[in-house]
Length: 131
Picture 1: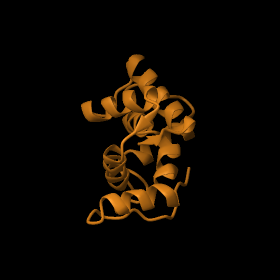
Picture 2: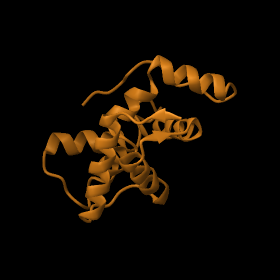
Picture 3: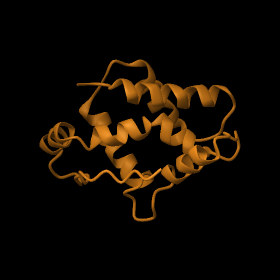
């Protein structure tokens, strides 16, 4: 088990609040992850492995630039959240946002995941956040 960093909890809490305010975004899996990150103190390596895979598909490291991260960047740039338009931003926050992305790239978490799941694709250590 790993202690969930405060920045990850804070981002997830924001995502959950946005859902409660009627914003769209995420899936039932993402909603559950957001609630978990917002309220739990620790998280399993298995869940961190799932998170690593999610960020690989939806974050800035994805071949297509990700599906959620660009929406989050747009949301930051407009400084006016739109409940129907910024689905990617809500999803990004539910999964812990920039803080979770950076946490999963730390040497400690990368090593723990590699040791536990040697056959799973390893995440790059490079942080590609751009907004």
